[in-house]
Image (cartoon, rainbow, N blue to C red; front, side, top):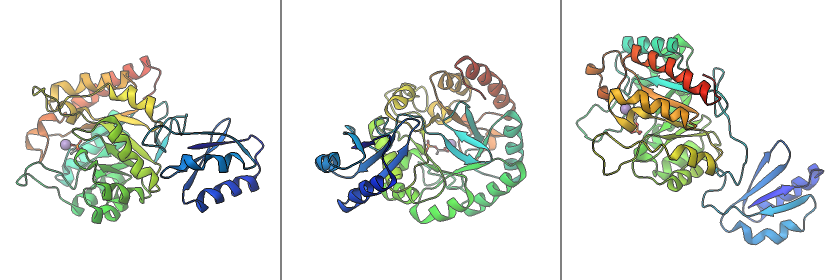
Length: 338
Ligand code: PEP
Ligand code: MN
């Protein structure tokens, strides 16, 4: 439930309220909005304690949160959340933020040249996988920490913040050390121990939608991260599995306006995995911006035929640069900057 405070509530009254929340075994989450200050009371069946808080000084009103996810819901927080990444980049504001780079980190030279190229085209964050969740155990599994070191070198070289995936609870600390944004892949969306672990991390988390997750399940996974202490969650629609087999997955563009309605968290789109075919990435990227995505994550590789994973869906650097020019026009048409 949400406690809305009276405009003139004193610090002592607020402390009494948060003290009572803790005493009853719940956790208080204070939000200072433009007009009002609210305190979320989070925990199982918090609403049964409503009368206790209603009787306390400084309390204006109490509203239940009807959804099974609380902290990430629009009911809990009306204003859009803007997440600052570092290096002057933030996601969820007016600016469309594009992350780009190879699916898997391969050689140092290729990573550095791709990083330079995507930066020159206007990407704000460099992507690159070091731990790869591959469907076949015989496919390339990623360079691990060696890859993370290369990514850190590319950041030093270009100044671009970097995003990379963590697959295992035991690797969270290491990945957090190298990454500016920690990626949770589609296949780990219900790895609840991993969600709890990145909830304790100090870096923002990009949470991909699962191959077959409903929007509600996805938002509950985001809730795991936020309620464990990390409010900086960026959602990423990456296509879902349907009966259609012409493309790798089916882009659920419905999800963007629906998630914006249900949650205050920023949402970006990954058309590379969503479509899986190079020539269809650009139209879906443009459509994503048009329907309200806050950003994109796109795979780019200078020699896709030699990429260690996802070559067929990787754009060449020059194709990526052309797409960025087109995206600027779409962004402008929907009142965003790029
Ligand atoms: C990736 O970003 O390379 C990736 C494996 O994505 P997903 O988890 O969406 O399949
Ligand atoms: Mn990939």
